[in-house]
Length: 286
Image (cartoon, rainbow, N blue to C red; front, side, top):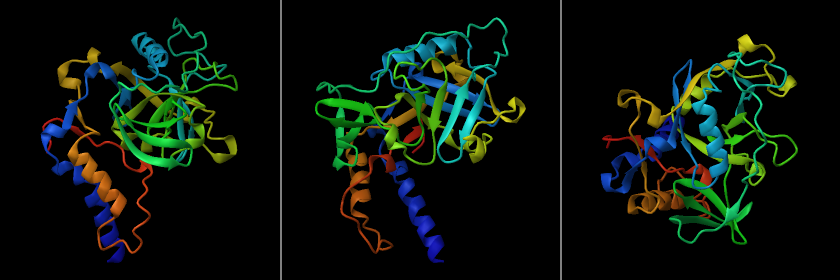
């Protein structure tokens, strides 16, 4: 019974956003979304154009040329990463597809922009002077610089040791928050819908570092399309709660205070920004 009580309490906290008023929600434009069609279902990605425009421009170009269609998740470590693309030495399923792309200039951080709608969450973060939400994305700030945080479900471009060596492959963070990657990998988006389908992607073994050698055993990408490419019937009309809304502020305060009688230890009032992302819902849902 105690375990059930704890589970119900956690579920009630997760669903708190469902009671918020419509005015605190904003539509997410289809041009900011990419639809990743897996064998198991559709995963929706929000692109971080405001922060990493060169990287998102490359991703959009690759999507437009159908580069990812038919490729696989070839390195998957449970509770850490799902890496997809075209491994070195393998051929693209579309023989005539362009597979040689120049390296991308790293977009790890940028100067803080005072004009951005930024909502602070916590000072004295382990790896930043301050964390907060900017345009819906979790960011860190120190010494006048800002960067996207590696919270679960963010997506970065895979690279080698050279900071400017990313080309086409991407990696989705899952399970934990690998914050050691902050300012070391180019985050360009985040999964905001259909996260459950990522759990069904086949995992690699620890003995191979998550690499799945046999193509037939990997999870396959059926397609990736920009939301603006899709007919209305295939689009998800998604909304995100505003970080500056009174409703979200109340939710954050509840997270800090832990007022429910279940909690014997109320914590110290500090909040890990990766624990509470901005709620996303289908438009019209209350």
